[in-house]
Image (cartoon, rainbow, N blue to C red; front, side, top):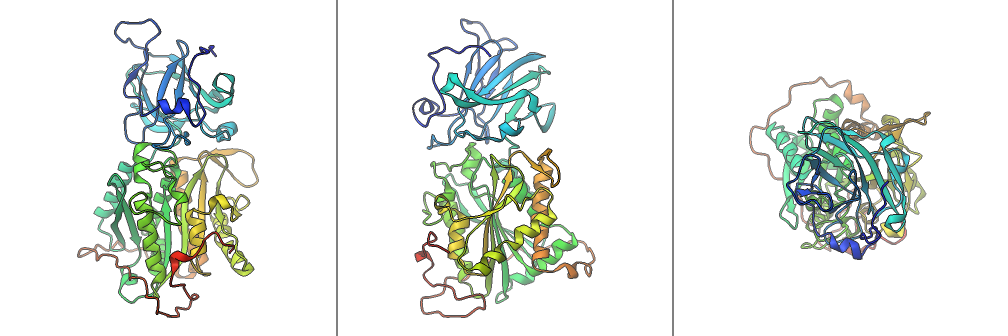
Length: 494
């Protein structure tokens, strides 16, 4: 690779150089040194000023090599992982080397064969670059920080090429998806706006269940699922969509689940971060998954709204909040796996392992071996840890992780790269596993597959009862609930 100027800015630290990257490149044309004429074919034009885009700076090292700088998360220079940008004005058969030079992480699946995603205007389906063209190494020209370099050959002059860290899943795509479901007018699918983000984007809450379960006074078993609290973890959205697609389908298992359970799903907790192309943070630079203990209604409004809803459900004597699952993606490990909590009650701890064991039987890409249970202090502000300390002994809280790259099937050593469909299949298998957990299998055979019923009138708003007063002492058969919920310290030993 070409030798860089020794005066070139350095990358990879939390201050200094990264402060100079204030936004995304906007139709930035890279011209050779000393060139003053009109841009010609082969003078590459970089752009990241689009939804979920991220590329902060481009520096040309030679005629064919370019250093690319990830834009840090807004208001937080620590996180630089997600990239998503386009390149145009290329020459046919033009060969380049792109170096992503300022990753904030050292460990990466690029060491294990992961490769960036690419598509173009004439080939709109995302595909991974060949791993043989991708290199991950310490670079002496960038303070020995890790650099990911990949070689690429542009083969069609009129195409615009797009490169990304992983399959993008934008806020707009998510809204279009929910709109399409809503238009089907299914009587067991309810969509409501639970709140808004700082930039006034919707916090959608979905309820999927038989309408009979929402009648006033009916007892409910609730499964609560959240996703995309970390905006760059796009596989979370594909897994979540797989769960939703299965639950609203006419599959006999889905029908049984809807009859017996209430699914509450908030698929995108950080819509601003998703829209802006951040990796981990919100617009204001907060890692929302460290603020469950005391979320601010103005700084963390989406988290605040979800927490208040969970507390209301927890205080409802007719509602049993059975599961909380927060979906993430992992940048250094293979497969799908879970994190759970540690409890001093051995029986509760053993019961907590049942669901991931069942999921391991249903999903070839899910690894129980990689699943772990902990109470690491740095995780104290996460949804799993906080709600695990808040809710009673009959509730189980998990983080579901899925690899950005691949899974390894048991008995083999070959890595199978994830596709969008494979992520959604994991989501379908998560949903199916509740059938096994609740031992509802015998009911599936009795169900024929009818046409979906249409809602004859506007869906009633999903009402949640107010918290019980301090004098209330109602026994609901799932353990006494504490009245002053906000005073419980989730960091205390379980």
